[in-house]
View 1 (cartoon, rainbow, N blue to C red):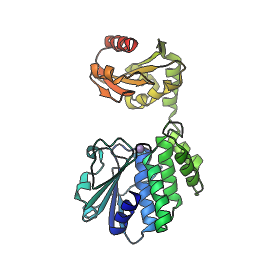
View 2 (cartoon, protein in one colour):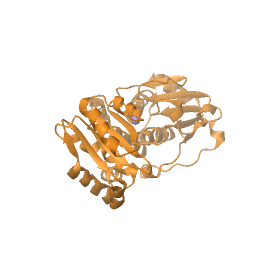
View 3 (cartoon, rainbow, N blue to C red):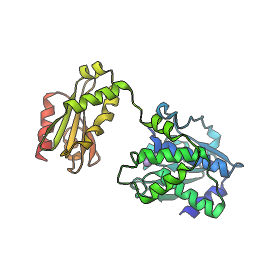
View 4 (cartoon, helix red, strand yellow):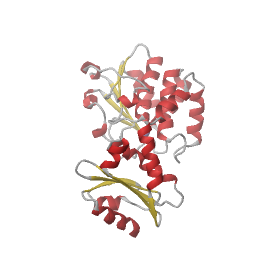
Length: 308
Ligand SMILES: [Mn+2]
């Protein structure tokens, strides 16, 4: 598979790299990291990386617009994107040949060539693996810019090497990437510093969460969010805060929005998306979301959780 990808890269003089909408560090790391690798090793080729810039990831890289003409006769490589609806920049259809490189389950097998490895911690890790083969067979060189991006992608998708997807290969590659000259302390600060308001609300979560029979919950009214100066989507990011509570099996955040109450469910085992489906929602078995419209319904959701 690596050989086939490298042959296509060699064969095309124009290459455009895509990633998914609403990007995370692995989306940026894998796509822009690959872009810098290709630029380093094929300076004669016309190479682009596309997707709507996300200001929260400016610390990783800034992007320039890609002209329509770039896609004609081009090799298109899409990283970290499970399905075509989530590909950022739908002009990928205008290319000549399409390669998918991803680590999500291959539920929509799009593209002329598909390289999916669900055991990979991140697509940034997969790009590094591609580099190792290319280094051996084609003499590719790594540079610090690409190394920093790939490292950030691995760190992001492994939750700083804590998730179970972290393998010996992950650590080995990350270790090799560390040998390049970039500021890891600054990178970690850029990735994980949060605003004082959000951190204070996190303190509220730790002070005020309730737990019964291994089921936790937190209630956040609009007044509370206003008092802390935190919006609904920022508050939603705190849902992982209860993962470390001893004895916690599953938990739910109720966050009041303009005209509804967002329900964020998380679990360490019990399948909770069945409950999400009962309350106008859905999602993954261990991480899903729902919506209720009155605070009285909060108890209904909790009762379902206790039953489970
Ligand atoms: Mn990823």
